[in-house]
Length: 431
Image 1: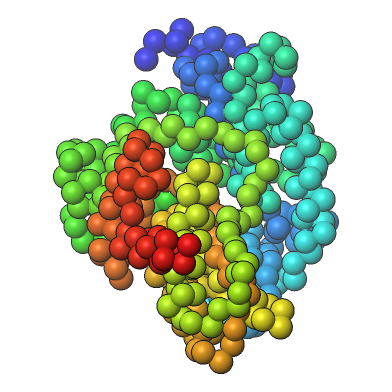
Image 2: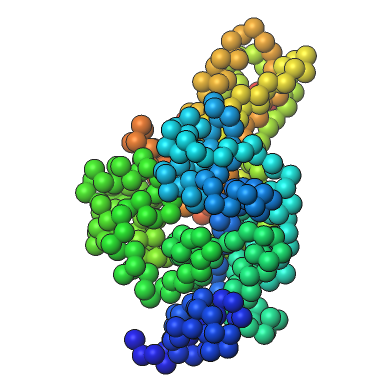
């Protein structure tokens, strides 16, 4: 690559120059980030390094060189751990007894959420000062879109982000890692490349070559179960996905095949959203007369599932938790929840999950005045998931998507299910 096409950014003094450099000509230090796309990329992902553990080490300097685990007692799980503990194989969500077997000298500290929230608030304020387009993912990570901020900050986004990382380290006392690219997926991928205290850049034109040799679970969003299925199907590296026809991937994995193909080539059209994070999507109805008949309650449940699914699809979210809400004739509230193996926004999947919950309560001994259904533990919708325990989910998803498209084009009554048609007929009879 022509050296004149390169830019070098000093992460200490923020000096930006054209051409590569091993050390900063301005301050003489060597924390230099070199990349030809430094001046033109604007989508970033910021991730605090071992956040909870970093706060504990900040507040107790004697812990600096020790393996630290933040979490519950012997019967609890690891909330997070420092990078020293990770060298022993300790990971978040690991049972504490397993973590201590791997790292018996670890210092275990209970969670102190008040000070974690205080630090997170300071970091969020600093991000908000850079751009109005900040999308938190969790307490310790967020996406940012810095498009158009160069005029305001008199510097390209890369310089503003390096300043942000430096200021967080100075003012909050912890380090962060930053990924910079052209979309959210590549920015998240970049932030994982150079941890801790890292800053990595991926230009869209280099994404395919970078991703190709990586194992299939390197793609953010491919979980362990799906990775196992892909491996069994012959896809061991991202390159295998890149070389497979889109039609073949869709035939095998439904909409997830489309998602896989896009991510394997580094494509992601999701915008950075700054709207308030939605906690749940739900619908409920109060009956004119109390109901005890299980079939009638199921009909009500189905209609609410359709309404909730429409709201989830409109918001572009999927949920891992389905919640059934009931209120008896004497105003006693009942709430029943079930966690799904894969997230959904589909009416059929919500109904299949909630129907057994309803059957256990609607046993003829109670009368109900209200029923509701909701989705919680929400995430951005990427595509319909592949459930290894229910391979027919892709066909049901495709059918529901086709019905949605028909309703959008020809009206809400263009396609109706047998249950919906029966409900409509019963209403006409009652009228």
